[in-house]
Image 1 (cartoon, rainbow over the protein chains, first blue to last red):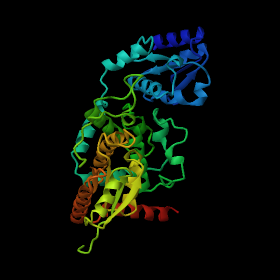
Image 2 (cartoon, each protein chain N blue to C red):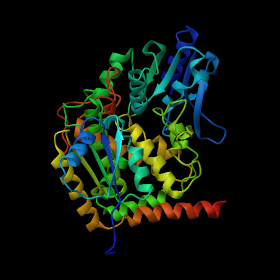
Image 3 (cartoon, rainbow over the protein chains, first blue to last red):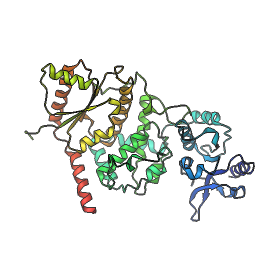
Image 4 (cartoon, rainbow over the protein chains, first blue to last red):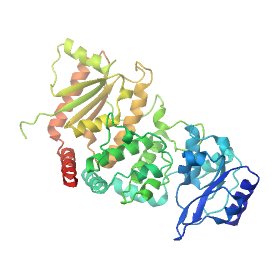
Length: 267
Length: 150
C-alpha cells in the first residue's frame, strides 16, 4: 500500500510521530506487527488480508509508549479499541495519530478523533458477520447441551492467558488471576477452574469488548472464547442500546447505570 | 432422593435484606432453615465470582438480595448490581449454567414476610430441581484431572 507507506514516511520524517505501528511481512510470509522508527524502513509496511491482528494491544505497553508519539495502522476494531482506551484514560488522544484503513483496504484520512468518531458511528458496530450465524445457532441449543459443549471446549484450556494478552482491553498490570489472596482462579488448568477464568474474563469485558475476535484467534488450542464476549456485546446492545468504543467520552456499561434499566428476573 | 435437603446460600445487603431477615425472626415468622445468610455491605459488593464459588463449594441454590431500587444506602450500589446481574445471567444462560437455581430479589428492611416467602419459594424450587449434580460432577472431575496431571 503505497499511500500508507508515503504517509508513514512523512509522519516519521517531519517528527510528528516517533513510531509507526503497522504490519510487515515476516520471513515465512505471515504478517507480523512492525514498529517503525526509521523513515527509511517505512517501505516494509504492508496492508492486505493477512493483516488481522488488533494492533491496539501495543498502545498500552510501556515499551512502545516510551518511544514517544505513536501512529497506528487501524482498521475499525482498532479504532474502537483506541476510543475505549481513551475513554478509560489509558491513552492520551493527543499522543496518537490514526492511519485508518477502510473495510475495503483503502487508507482513510483521519485528521483527529472527531473524524474517527464520525467514521465509527457510520460503520456497522454489531458482531462480525462470520460469527453472527454461529451465535444464533449456538443460542438454539438446550442448556444441557451448552453446558456440555463448554465443558468439552474449556477442558482443552492450558491457562496460557493468550486470550488476555491479545486483548487490547485487558490492560491491567495486575490481573485477578495473578492475585492469590484470595485465589479466585486456580493456578492449575482444570475444567472447572478454566470455566471460572473464562466467565471472569467475559464479565470483565462486558460492555467493553469491541468484537475484534482476537481472543479466539490467539487461543492456541482453539477455544472459541470470543463467542462469550461477543454474546455479551449483543446483550449489552439488547438491554442498554450501546456499543463499546463509539466515543471518547462514554463510560463502560457496567460502571454506570440508568434508574430505569429493564430486567424481568428480580422478584 | 427423598431425603435431599437443599443447601441454599443467600448473599444479602446489610442495610435492607439483612435487616429484613432480622425482622422475619423478630416477627416469629417460620421459614425454611436451609438457607445460610452471608451479609455484605451492599449488593454492589456482591461479586459474580462469589456466586460461582458458592456453586463450587456445594450450594444447590443461591439467593441474592438487597435494597429496592432508589433505596440503596449508598445511593447507587443496587443499580450497578442490577446491570451486573443482567449481564451475568445472560452469560450463564449462554454457558448452560442453571440460572433457575439463582433467585434475585429486592427485600427491604420492612419486608420480613417477603423474605420468608423468597426463601420458601427458592427452597421449594430447589427441592424440585434436586441437587446440582452437573456442576458438582464438573468440580469433582476437575479434582480428578489435577490428580492425574500431577
